[in-house]
Image (cartoon, rainbow, N blue to C red; front, side):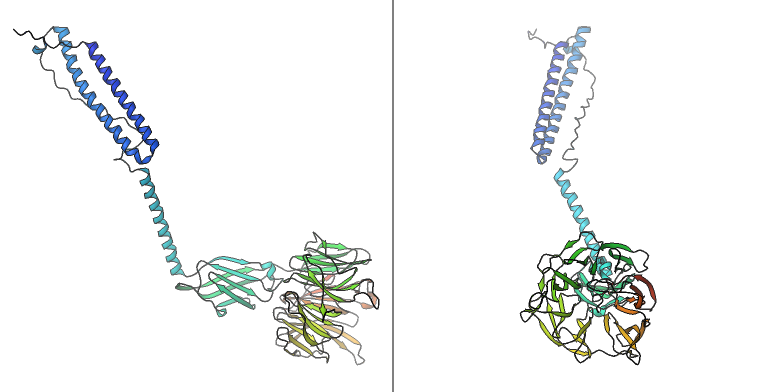
Length: 574
């Protein structure tokens, strides 16, 4: 009989202790795996896949160990039960029924495994590639549309309010692509108005050489415009509407303050903008008013906004008097005739021409001829420039431009300057022999001013405007006494039409046209026998009316009290 001891079965307490030890060991391994995962996550996304693989391996090992432990425990439990209950030796015990073990599912985490999803940097690259692909498709689509539809306007720049007051305003078109060369023949403006063209790249600039009509819709078309890279042609079209005109007038009051007011062309919305005891003269630019105020010690020259606010005084050459104010809107200058208050045969300046900046940043400049201050009989700013045309007391006609160093240019002898056309640099001048000529200020050439048809005789004043002239003519009886006066419109072809006529008791003091030649302002002093002159530096009848007329139809619009319309380049002269 063998003396070997049979295997001693473990008690239930021993088996439970073994199972608990195995569980603690598994939990420790799992905790270690989680800590490793956290360290690897902090190291970066690039190592995430490796940490997850280690975690999966740890769980799989745990599951296998748990399976082994479970199987051993089941066998030992069965033997112990049989021993405790029946006292059967182990070798005599029947084999237990086979049991199927299902390992517990692996613990889930928020992070997908490497087999489930790509790393984050790979997802970013995919998204970036998709966005770039969409942009390429959109760009290709837009390019295709441009090639199939031709150029289009993307932006229009225009200042309609400025366009009715000054020449040289622009419409600037910007297109979606660079354009091939554009000729002026491709451009039309309706209603027709003269213009110049400046086009380059994606921009097309159309400069109007004369002011535009008010309350009018203008349409600009550029036919057969093509892209610089080819493709179909198209017609570029844009429209804009100019605002209604307004006008400034001066109303003198013998018993109170003189007032400058602004009104529309109906006369129903007059608004006073500046008042003073004695306003001698004023002029208006597109942004400012220049006002000459008469005081006992002399004149003051004020510059202010168009609503009369923020007045500031300009420095004068001395203590004296200012007259014949004019402004150069484009050059930013004011000009005037100046005389010292204290004059004698040997001292003091009389009727010298002074120009200075409207900003007041410079000192007044007295015009000189041959190194000496010149006494000026009559003068005018050349429209759309800073040049001055003047006649001195010797009858010499000269031109000087503040913006250049060319000096004074001599243009012969003359008795008066009737006017200077906007946009043409052409002056209407009366020579010493009485002939009236059109003088080209750029080259000095001249030609006789054509007579009107019918011929109304010699005009006392001639005021040019775009498309024609306003001519003031006086009818006289056989004794040479005035029997009536009239303002005649004469177009560029010479056709003359009477616009305003008055009898011998009234007098026409001034006539001027709106900047575009759409309207006319005619100043009439009624009933001269009962209309005394005031005692201002520029003496005028106390009662004056400004008649506004439509030059296209000849119809009168309204008659307003006042004179010195802001459309006029100069004040009335006597």
